Amino acid sequence: SSSSGGERAVDTNQPNVRITNCRISDVVSAVRFTAATARDGLVQGCLIHDCVGFDGASEGYGVQGSGSRIKVVNNSFLTIQRHAVYISGGDATHSATEWYVGGNFISGLSNSAIALYSPEPDLPVQNNVVIGNRIDYCVATVGAGGCSAIGITERCYNNIVANNIISNVTGANAYGILIKGETSGSVSTVHRPIGNMILGNHITHDTTTGEDAIAVLNADDTMILNNILVGSGSKNGIKVYTAGASDGVMATRTVIHGNSIHSYNWPIVLNDSNVSDTHIGFNHYYSNDTNSVRDLSGVLVSGTPAFSSTSSRIAAFVVQGSASSFTLVTWAGSQPSDQILVTVQSDAAVSSLSSGLVLHSHCT
Image: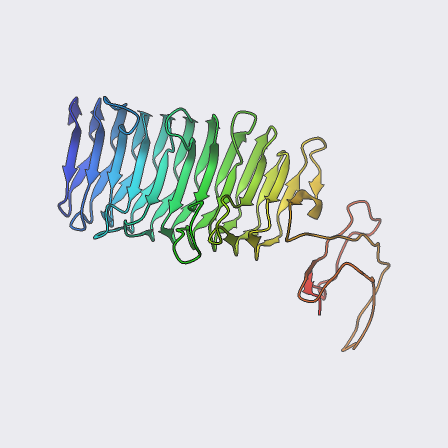
């Protein structure tokens, strides 16, 4: 079936609503699920386009709402004013949980393609999966915050963003993936995204006209694992930072492991002293000019924490049995509890570590 014109094609608070193989256009919002009673819904195989909003920038959605166990799969979203998929807490009485957004093609948006958002007093948006979507041509022209291909904002907990392909996200404040908390408030009141995972995404991003590929702002316990980021321009691959001056502003316990980061100004940036407990390891950095693998110098840190480094070429050295003490390098810059990352010098005549050695240790 097809629908065009009017406010919404489907607006429901009922369970088990299924919308399949439909064409929907020229509406404020194509599909909206509301209230806790909206559960086990399905939007599949639909063409949803030209949801541009008639009365301003706050209108124009593909699929939006709260509820639980909603599946949005294998649809095409074209020319949407705000968001192709918008998952929101709804209000203080019901949340948005266990949505599955996968296999969709999204192109021609003026704001974030897929947005998860829960401000106070809404209940958290949590345990949702955004996987395997193709997002192309999002241009940040609507909304003061610009756009990201995928955005996770404020009270969003334990969501997974995995295996999405993102390209051509442009405009001021335009990110590939943005995880963003509030910028003011005390430790007990500020709302930060917690426990979200960014896994295995491929982002091709021209930062001359956009922002960082992946940005974490005022968020806790974020895992950024095994992503491929290919960029150009003056911005960065992964940036962890804070904004605001209150004591609740922080970004803690971010894990950045196994990413391949190509041709950004800096592969990884930790931007200020309110960024803490960041774990970085086993990433591959490729520089802007020589396309060669970069070592730990691919991480830029402003303020604290800070990295120090030393470079010493170690001759062949064998440890057998239970050797109790040996010294290879004296490093005055190390402190108790520091983590030491070991790498092989790329120009060394011998470039191997035996299987008996580990690539990191802790300074005691």
